Amino acid sequence: MSEKRIILVIEDDKYISHFIDISLSKENYAVLIAETAAEGLFLYTSHRPDIVLLDLGLPDRDGVDLLRELRTFSDTPVLIVSARGQETEKIAALDLGANDYITKPFHMGELMARIRVVERLLEKNGTADGEFVFSCDWLTVDYEKRRVLVSGNEIHLTPTEYKTLLLLISNRGKVLTHNYIIRQIWGYEGGDSKSVRVFMANLRRKLEKDTTHPRFILTEVGVGYRFAGE
Image (cartoon, rainbow, N blue to C red):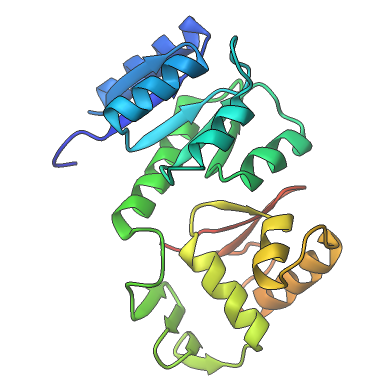
């Protein structure tokens, strides 16, 4: 990194925040620590960090509420780091716009890997709008010509499959919940997640060399999907 990225850690457990602070500082990040939601919101507005690590169990306010407020004026990547591991908690946070969700206890190597994914999103601006061609391993997508190639061979995708692929690519590295995919692709709320799984399985068969060990479309069990292309 040519200049330090700023990471805001909103975490009331001093032991965990200190551990994260030391680990990230060693990796040349500038770290800001907030122990409450109010302090976190102040540091966010005053320093404009590149990435936010957010605990949900804050003493003055639920982290989900803080995330909801942040998303009213900011698209800064937010990684949830929380002891709440229930699928409903994860889905709620991801549906509100969190980029990822890590459950405590966690290994620092896992957190660093998730941060690096977010950094790549920042570097690529996270969308396909400024690109003409997406290419990764054997998959190539030509946006101008609306062509999809697998190992150099053009494949046929239905309009809905193509739209879904673009949605995944433009959010690569980010977990998309079943509800979010349904809302973006089919335009309604509360659809059947089973139908999404069947749809994604069909899309995988067209894109992946080995559907049992997918390279691109990864399943986040009980939550949704993540596109792993870089």
